[in-house]
Length: 301
Image: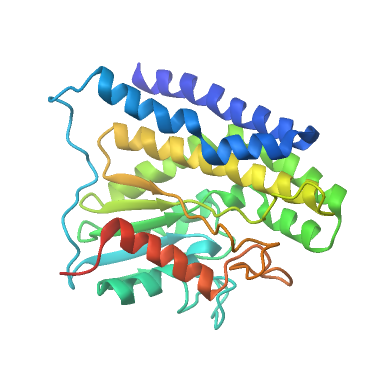
């Protein structure tokens, strides 16, 4: 009964994301994006729930808070955002970089990065087929970045980087239609990760907004707003999927990352703005991901 209820509740949420982004594409981008990024309703709801029902018997948070140690065994999995594409000094077909956020985080936190099994271009299916082998019952910490390639972001990047504004927005619209199938894929991945690493805490990282879309008079405003809207939709689907796993007792949490003031269009972007690595963080951008992980998890004690 619970799985059916989960599927029934999931589909309308994904549909609402698609409809909200369609509004952005039709000309209400600035207002809708402001509302989404501010998210006043979601921020208020937890406070209302807490005051309405301060239940002392609530289940403990499954995401444990014990400190990291030098022997913490950490495994990173996912796509190009976890591999470090765009950070410089990438190696191999997976574009792994020593400047990727898993490597930077492990160094700064003083923990043991057993392996970064992420690979540029990886989809949820690729992760299930090729990356779960890196996990076992000795794994203490896992970070996951996945979902973007299931929406065809490579095609989006290609058209947008080439300045094909109409084709770029059409690719974004096509990607949005796939948001409806992504929740089930993410549920499968997150469940498989939790099963493969039963003793690990799992951190799922979001995708940063790519553009500063605050100026409606900018020549690329429509394209920027469309891409940001798609990213917001993707992050919301990821966040909801993580929350469902967490509600089931999985030691999992969602970590948003914001490059506010350093997006494409800002004076000093933390993203590659041209070439094959466009839309991927620079080494500085990945360092921000690592900093957010340290804020969440701390350093080894």
